[in-house]
Length: 446
Image 1 (cartoon, helix red, strand yellow):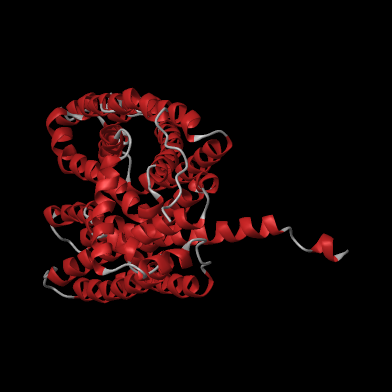
Image 2 (spheres, one colour; image 1 turned 90 degrees about the vertical axis):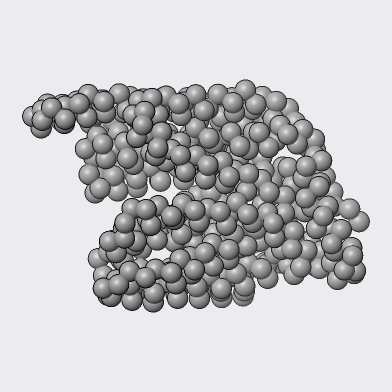
């Protein structure tokens, strides 16, 4: 075999390296999210804390909502690459501290959780800062066409981290010890920090950005921070963009908030939900890959409308699951025989199929949403503008999460999921306008 035949083409090597750093950085973004919003709630539940305290974990979304406040600082000081491995090291240390605190709480009779909550808040701030740097690095290191091509990869890696946390690490914590469960997460973050410090490639514009920042005076840096906020609001159709971000995944978020409760009401056990969740997560990963490839092959303007229609078309499927919940609850109140109640419930195959279809289309929509956000980012304020967009989306998620349980309990599952379907209408009305407003490629100011 000749040297030419045995040596992989440079394009293949470049693709492999891009896949490697894209997947590992976004795995590192997803794992702290899982610690905050999945593993922590499982631990607090297992520790016997009241539901009110377990529910406080939803408030940790506030760190993601507020990250726009300090995102211009990440954009301005240091490089995105430096911020990435520094925040990963800090996250590893904080999660390691959480592992020790969790083990102490699980072994003690008291329930003083103040240090655990302070540590979770610190993890939330560090995680949000890492997200800012990771998103900025992605846009800095890849040209516009490649950003769309690898969008599915980044979403898939994030979902894999969620699967590792919510399945593997929760299993370790519940089966063995929470010191081991959280400790493995800490070790993974520290290993990623070391690996990225040694191997993460420098962004194409990293040196140029660093030189430009060092040349600025203090007043110019403050003006840059101020411009980061104002330029996002001055972009074309800024109000339309904000409304679209607020409503794009609104119906999907309402579905997600109460889907586990619905399945529980239908008699689906925790173990069965775990299996269904695994298939759903796998479907969302496949959907994200399909969505990213679709956008890269055509364009965002051509792909986002059909992807949005697919996402919203799957939402009414939940009404098929919600419909039997009312007669089942009435039968339970009347002490109906178990075989009668079981006959009303949809089969596990039906439940799993609906969840897989919804997650597949939802994964495509997440990829489209990420590419849309990247298209709205000015080159001089990449990280800040992406943080603004994700903060708007997180605000919508947090608001729906705060009241979804009350609406579900007061109105019942059928009305709740009907309202969730109605919540999909605004994004359907806006997506056609958004598709026509994709900005042209912009170059950074000299």
